Image 1 (spheres, rainbow, N blue to C red):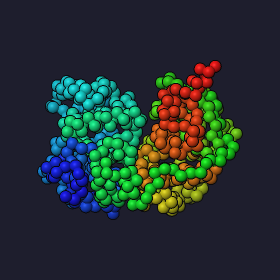
Image 2: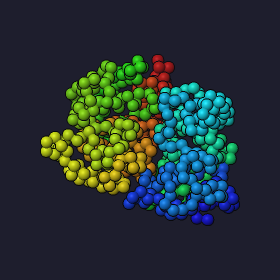
Image 3: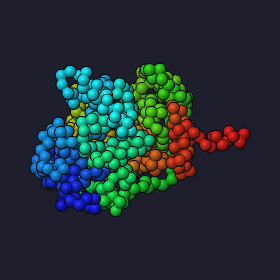
Image 4: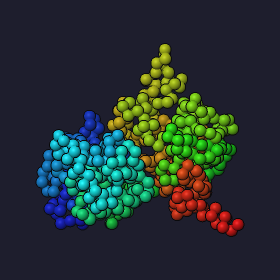
Amino acid sequence: MPGESPGLGSGAGDLAIELVGISKSFGPVQANRDIDLAVHRGTIHGIVGENGAGKSTLMSILYGFYQADSGEIRVNGKPTRIPDSLAAIRAGIGMVHQHFMLVEPFTVLENVVLGAEDGALLRPSLAKARAELKRLEREYELDVSPDAVVGELSVGLQQRVEILKALYRECDILILDEPTGVLTPAEADHLFRILEHLKSEGKTIILITHKLREIMAVTDAVSVMRRGEMVKTLTTSETSPAEIAELMVGRRVLLRVEKAPAVPGPAMLDVEGLRLVDEQGVERLRGIGLTLRAGEILGVAGVAGNGQSELLEVLAGVRPATSGSVRLKGAPLDLSRSTNAGDRREAGIAHIPEDRHRRGLVMAFDEWENSCLGYQGEARFRGPALTLDRTAIRDHAREAIERFDIRPASCDLKTANFSGGNQQKIVIAREMERDPDVLLVGQPTRGVDIGAIEFIHRQIVALRDRGKAILLVSVELDEIRALADRIIVMFDGRISGERLAAETDERELGLLMAGIDLVEHAQTASN
């Protein structure tokens, strides 16, 4: 049968999902082309591909968000029409999206019940849901308070709420789109334990991810898509990350970062005693001190929520500091409320924010508009009488699209219609092409595929090799260790340790992330 996973079942009777000849176009863009896919019941099936390969579109068709132009969907062997998400839920299909579909001011209980009420009176529905939630939490290790306000929960707990929503609706097939893109390593490990438990209960999991290590660790089969087509389906135990990466990109991919040793120059950024107390009175930065030199990448590791985001925001001029000093090439920077990100850009500091949707892009704008966002006042973009020279901006955007391999290659497409990885490339192109003295980078490859990761890493190293200074924040230890020349680790708003990248390992960094410095501890003990 076309697309069937090899070695995982005896035939069509074992299939939870079968897609036959699925095609979908958005105007001139062919997102899916004659896709066949077979997913066996009670397995974890991975779907991988570059950003823009059509993975999310295909799953959105299965979940009823989009309608295929042609092809057939079969659920448990039966042809099934899925015109909307309610039909998908009735067919036993649930989906956890990359960007959660939760109402943040509502409680966990209210979010779970929303759209699944038993009648006009909410009280009986809420009582029933509370009892069922307790059972699901106990059975699947999905502990979360039903009365907690969703907007006050961590990203990992919000994801559990999405899974609880799907299980409350009695789904047997669960689709997860890039589920670990915003999770800490510990949260990701917990998620995979939950998925293994769901699988042991007979549930079928479809996992969209760009992380090949996760594919190898948790899936039974993996389907590879490229440019809207299904390339191949493999039994995971019979393949390798290198083979999957080559199938994804259509060429051999380097799974490591190639770079020469750094040649650090003079100090570009000196930070001393940097403190930040937020609006709630919580001290987020507790006397941070660091030096960033020309020609080096300084990595900032740590579990999310330990002050890394606030450090980037203060340095980028997004928020004021409470106290401390920052000097750029020896000149003091204004850290008060009168400063802004525009001042930093003029001083030679560029910023690739951690959250491209909230901080890096205006999703309703066309690509050409986002390509100059924050730099629209430059002389080359100005037209007569305080207007913008749209022709000049479009020409600039087209050049950036070609240089940074942004797909689709259209500067007139809405930014929201690009895949996550290509949205990231739009931000990276905009900030890097100004050749800044200092580049602040937050989570550069979050939600980005293996081919784009390789490209982004090359761009960061090339900027370093041109003598620029780069401060890199990432929750991915592999990324930090591969890119950084020096690594500082943040814990509870402080720097818990500093290491040369070539002289440390994941174990030592993991201890520093927990606030334990073995070197300092050993020195103290010897005294």
